[in-house]
Image (cartoon, rainbow, N blue to C red; front, side, top):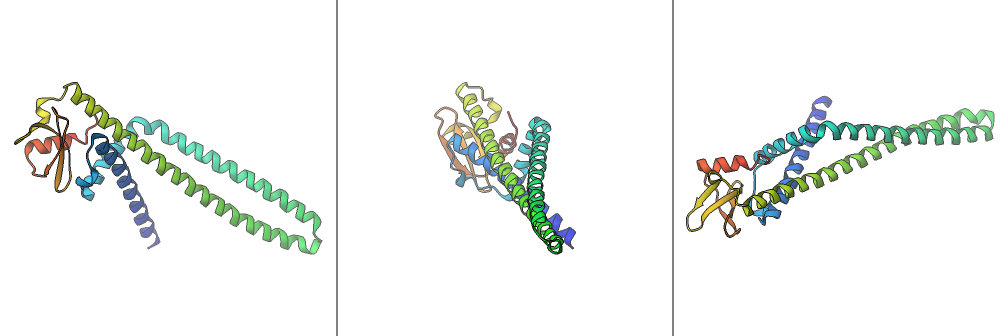
Amino acid sequence: MNRALDWAMVITLCASFMYTVSIAFFNEYLLTLGVEPSFIIRNTEQILYHSIFILAETILISGVFFFPLLIIFTGVVLVSLIIIFRFYKTKKLFVKYKKNKANKKLKKRRISLSFGSYLDRVIIFILKVFVITLVVVFTMIYFEKKGEKKAHRLLTKIESNQIKESELLTKEGVGKILLISCGTNNCAAIDVKSKEIIYFENKITDNTIHSFLREYKEE
């Protein structure tokens, strides 16, 4: 039962992390392009599917070097702090041991050791929370920057007229538009001539599917 709960917690944390990564990337991408994120509401499947793609790409490109270094650094910091606190605790215990009478030495030593063990657990827990918080914060910042860079690449591509005809959709009354993203109900596109953002109802067509899939492909 406990093992099942542990696995459920791990799965929940992983899903939450993936959800956060996708939201950070996607919202910054839309905001940079001038799209209001609240208009493009995605379902859970879309969010998790998107996060798998961007996480896989990140792991392949930078994870081979970054994550091992992070693990090593975290381990070194934890071990160093534990050694420092243990040294301080041992020194303090030795001073108390010298000053007390023989019949009280063992009792105080046991109390100190018990408190020291509890202190170690508290310190390690605080350090774990601190490290996890840092990882989450820097991960969000990193993926926000990735979303922003992708948006800037798209804008540069539009400005330099490098958009292929096959990537464009024809919107009645507007002309050629480039699909930015689709949610469950609405889509957002950009007029390649006026650079105006256009919102419209999500009606799936072959071209829409093609452009929608292209959204998840890093250029």
